[in-house]
Image 1 (spheres, rainbow, N blue to C red):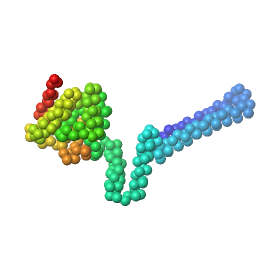
Image 2 (image 1 turned 135 degrees about the horizontal axis):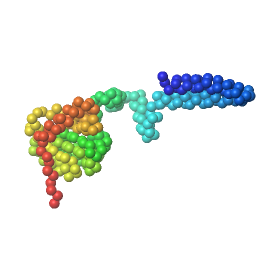
Image 3 (image 1 turned 135 degrees about the vertical axis):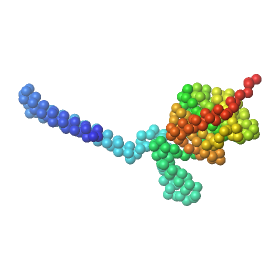
Image 4 (image 1 turned 30 degrees about the horizontal axis):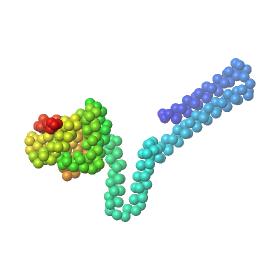
Length: 278
């Protein structure tokens, strides 16, 4: 039974009791006809007011159903409305291939959101944004484990997102988030490339490890991955040449497997010893 039906039944039942009680009291206290009419009219007005409240509540629900962006903040509403307007504009034009590709990618968002709603895996196109969202949610004492093949220094130092990602790692580690990162290296050249980055991260309270692929007792199941057990989320990069395209998972079995993989790799890794400050 809905809240509206319950309220109407309650008002109707209460109304019958109220009318009977009014006439009984009129006999007992010898109330005049005009007094009885006033009392009944007062109840009628209260009933009308209750119906008005119900109507307003229903109208609000219908408006939210028709315009779901109303539940968002003003800033979010502006962004959503501008996005829809831009989508409609491009949909009508659809003049070039790049526009068609952009529209096709935008239309995948619905599927992505439905997957997230169901707790399913989905593809995300920004490895930095995905990891930063996780890092920002972590509280002191919680952990973030990463097996990374981002060996080139520009992955950590070049561009806005790479720089912000690096700084956020340092801020969260300083606050007490336990960040462990294992760099997966191919050879000594990789070690030389990433050595300064590893040293900087170690200096900023991150537990840094490194391992050479050839030293691992089994092939890596993924090119790289990250996870947080506390937030029940994992980020998986399947291919080294597609680092920007990652899979986001909240599947507990997959996260447990990632955690096991991380611990297994960590056992075979070397703890990086940061350079002593002069």
